[in-house]
Length: 562
Ligand code: C2O
Ligand code: CU
Image (cartoon, rainbow, N blue to C red; front, side, top):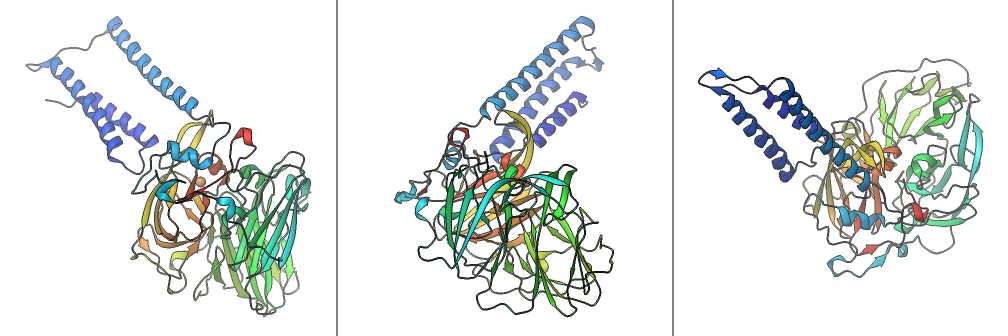
């Protein structure tokens, strides 16, 4: 008895299809079906093989016309199957002209884990509460800002031009700086010619109706329109704001800016601050990496002995690597949250995922210090006592690991807590259609938005999310309205300072366990902050039972959040 070679080919083919369209997380039924298909085909091949081998004599396979006919029939069958699947995928991928982001998810979702997906907005006997009731506090604001969105042709420091859409005529938009506890009122005025837009406060856990997501928490503000956002600054640290309407295009074109919340008691005087937003702009000279729209070296003079804080924001889609040459430094905050007992880092490379932030602090030495984005080593920020001098950029070094940096401190929950709910999420990619167009899709548990089942929670619950990335690119996953505590990374418990993130970057092959308290009722985006991935399917929602949205998304509504 020998093993038919064609069995190997069948096994290989099925494995290949499984790699492209793997059921995720690994569920029993699809696995059994695919292994069942393999087993069935093997039995057929084996029996036919056995028919040909009798008494040690192998009868030849058909040749000539008979063989050609068999090959033709088999090829046609495969083409019909593949074509049929592609056609079906193409048709079903088309997005409705008008839909509720959350209803689609509930209608098409088949969720993993122990979540009751039937308990949507009318679940658990809770009264239906529209999210519009979760607004910021009334009263006289402590700080008022106006952000005017316009179309603008702007220049980078090199002179390269950007056809931008910008807040207040600048890229990035103006720095909004407030104090912890301030009641902040921001008026968005849309003076673009044809770009409906919104403002989302990235990393601020604001009330749901102030979250700025077109089609979920508000309608996009049309040209000529305006919208008022009100929220109290409960957090401290480095954040940013950006459009959440067609964000993959609008943020790219410049509709973003930094947002800094100073601590309530006056901050120690004399700290020299640099707020630096990294972003790639499309210019007349091609894609250009910038720090605050500078694509050339920027020089600043800082007297030796001055405490310096650099607030680094990655406003780009992809991860960036930064180095700071010329001084040891501390990472004093990650995603706005302070690091407990940070220690000095030397010649360390910092990876910052799209949407994330680091605060770096050091005391200015008497020689130059140079901040470099490794995507543009000739540019960057050079600090020196007289604004002159040279220092070569640091181009490599050991990589910073925030899960092992600083010292542990008390947290309200941790890896050993009893969780009320847990979710398993697998990020992946596969070829397919999105809204009738062929793409490489970015999937969550095999689904693309708006068909990704919602993560449904009840107010007050303690939630655990296990997330892994089996796709070939990194995904900076951003949950709105909450900060998640990192429990473990790649199976190792986080041992450093408690790490509270709003954007968790999973490199290819990585996995994280995260926890959060469901303490901010509403309907919240949870998506990849590579905004092109978000627009191509990698978007889901966190929903609180009993809460609904009156807003619709889709072509006919003018609302497209990603
Ligand atoms: Cu910074 Cu949903 O976005
Ligand atoms: Cu992604």
